[in-house]
Length: 166
Image (cartoon, rainbow, N blue to C red; front, side):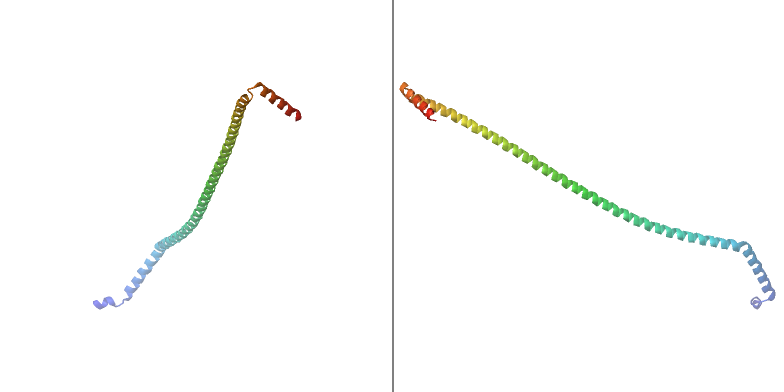
């Protein structure tokens, strides 16, 4: 018995081949095309996914480079704004210094004019006081000197004579 199973028999071989061919044709007719279609669809889906992934990678690279460009542009704009702000600050400080210097010069000039006016007024006052004192002194001296009527007449004649010569 054990040896009969191992030995090939024509009938068993024939029926095994027939069953295999029938099974093969049935599979080919009903299962082979759907399996191949499913495999093809899966292959197409994988290919499409790979293409989408590649496209997404390229888009990400483009986005990254555009982000870097925007970042560089923003930094350049920031630097320009800072430079303009510094220039404006320097101009405002310079203008304020110039204005302060001009105001100080104007105040200094006004002060000098006021000092000069007060100086002239003081000199005029001193002159007026000195001349009033001189007249008072001269009057007192002349009164003392011309107490006598003859001295007065003699002085008047001398003044008239001096005026006549000039």
